[in-house]
View 1 (cartoon, rainbow, N blue to C red):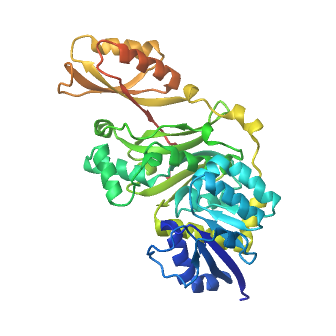
View 2 (cartoon, rainbow, N blue to C red):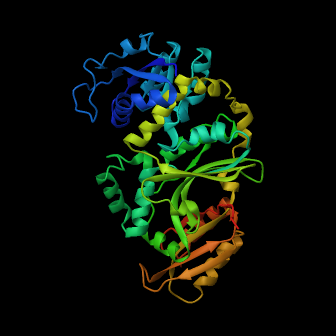
Amino acid sequence: MSQKTVKIGLIGLGTVGAGVAKILLEESGQILQKTGLNIELARIVDKDIKSQRPVKLPKGMLTKNLDALINDKSIDIAVELVGGTGFAKDLHIKLLESGKHVVTANKALLAEHGNELYRVARKNNTCIAFEASCAGGIPIISAIRTGLAANKIEAIYGIVNGTCNYILTNMTKKGLSFKAALKKAQQKGFAEADPTLDINGHDSAHKLVIMASFAFGYEFKIEDVHIEGIESISIDDIRYAEELGYVLKLLAIAKNETDGTISLRVHPSFLHKECALARVDGSFNAVSIFGSAVGQTMFYGRGAGMMPTASAVVSDIIDVALGNSVTTFNSLKLKGRSEIESKIGNIQTLTKRFYIRLMAKDEPGVFSKYSKILGDNNISISGALQHEGTGPENTVPVVITTHPTKQENIDKAIKQLTKATFISGKPVCIRIVDIPEDNID
């Protein structure tokens, strides 16, 4: 087999960067055997060149001199793993304009500035590869862009944040409070010291923008996504919903709605316990995609961590070096903002089922009172469950599930129930998501 030498410049030697260096330095032989590529890690740039890393680097490879990498014409591919959107955006532009292909795992950068960077890459006859940006070691981008290219994508349902899934799994399986589950996630290394972007849903939203853009062929923006996090989730609601057969997950959803719009949303969702996504536990990720020809597909694996994410980064390096990514990138055609803005669905008009928990006064006639408020707002009750035990102000927890109704109806009803004298506090409302999974006879 003929050999081709490709030189790599790596920017950022954090957790994932160290994993990438480890693979390129220790597995170069098997990469050569499988692909005919002699992938040479030529230079690593990081602001910290003294800390110990879990990989042994050749002397002189690690430097603080970024310009030396950018100006090195022998480096074919630059790997950006610094994160963020300010410095990273400027860095991408410099790398692309210097004639280098770029590999990145930076989902925030691509979700917020990807459309601009793609244009810069094309102008300079280069490409951007980003398999690691959405689901760690799961090859979801290649699946959408090539594996499912023959399909019109109807919907994407994803658990794409391992931190949130780990927290919700521990609340569900071990009865931990949100605060205790978050602390455990941090102790295990599944959550950052500042987990805000994970638990408020924005990390999942960044990933959804990237997946949806290539699934539906539009230049989506983060502003197109309705975002809710898991910060306010109570163990009580997880327990009550479990009695009804539901499991709570933070879902990233992109869907062609029946009114012709495309909804993009990230929010806590109750799934029936028999649903495949409901059984995805711990820090694992999973993405279910519905295609017009293939039906339902399911992609499952570790969505974060040093080596799973590094695996995806190296796969991109190989794909770029083989010339595959360049071809795929050049054939990528996304419709502009003028064609998509009228198609973005409004969360208020979406028709879904809901879980509602009220703290209702334990007195005669209360059921008819809250039922009337729901009925007046065109909300039909599909089931109700009342628990014994007295809460604040002589109240008892009442759990209601609804038939499909519009979000705007629910919002009006919740506002009225919050003001009602027979209800204590603001009711809890969480969407129920019914995923139409394929049946195997």
